[in-house]
Length: 251
Length: 323
Image (cartoon, rainbow over all chains, first blue to last red; front, side, top):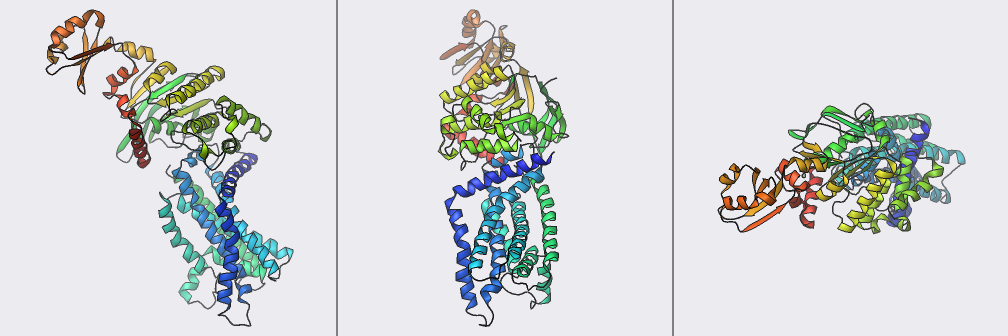
């Protein structure tokens, strides 16, 4: 199994996901408008009830970036259920590629949508006076990729055990809401009761949000690098579980 | 070396045995037919040969590679056209083929040329940039056959390639398959419901029923082995016991309203058969075809299962639910 073959396999699956994405116009449109909606409507609303001396829209900006990636990552994972239903997955699984390659290809393919949304919000942020430098944009993007890998992997793992899209929606809800609410995207985590604090420590998104705050606002519980390493650690573990799930998957 | 050898291959789903210790081999360059009623184990066998299912026990080699020990090598050697559509209908035909070419690591500079080549084979060049969603069932199947050929596999598996297609399209598809076998020397394994097709296309056929191979030979040999002509009789009070005692009668079987009798040299013996049978309201005699062979070995008429379009749909829904 040479590297060229693996990369080509990943590219093949990405190629397909991207073509499907661009053909479903509604998904492209929603990817562009969701970030705007959250930033202005939700951020504006929450901002109006917080103290005037603190800019809530700045505080919450990294959280919104994380949120877009969390929700669209999980949402894109659902497509694996559909792929199996229309038998398309057989065509992919019968190709001479390892399950890890196929899983990675799916991850990269599904990440595209999530990252596109995040990039749009990043651009909005530049115009809204978030203090960006080339370095912190780079750090932000790396962290978002790390988070997207984790979330899409979660989605794909759940999806490979689900028989129907409805079942997927229910189970993924159980995963995505705690993941999101405990990530610290909307509120700081340091004043939470102890038992909730413990839960936030096993939530990969909480490290990503903290890392994003460190990169963008320069204020965080932990420095950037340890946060990034924890997120990448989760990624590696989830990719391993994902490979196993793809091997177990019923066709 | 045989293209495929299968030794005691078995697949159990919980208490259900889908494939029960089958043994056979497929020769290099032949068109091999796998015939059987729904649920007989045809698709399960193909899924094991293509490494998508792990055998419960037994073994199989494909192009010299063991399916459990060397799945990657097996997958590189084979092409597969699945029974149910497995292309992405939001992509164009060209995009589906390009995806396939990338998955099979074809060199980037020859991908477009190869795609045009296989699309030419199935007459789809003109529609290659249209979304698969806009294709008819026959076009979609042809595209998927082209896709199975794109990486020039040594062995091509076709699972019910003509199911649910109109007769004209069926004939086209079979023409492609025949010329392919002739021009490339590719080994082709095909499952089908259509006996006439298997009859004039396959070099050899295996009849599979309840997960077991019940007969395997060339269509001509199988027909000859029935040892006579088929006579169908209808009547309210046929004297079956007396018929069975006649020296030229090889087998008697009740087939719905008909009684089916295997008769040696029916042209000569029919009059005596009718005298013995009692009051007969209908009589028909023909030399055996593969349908008769199938009936003889499985006790089921495969034609009934083809049935109406509605029945096909139900059969396919069942197959889906069974997953």
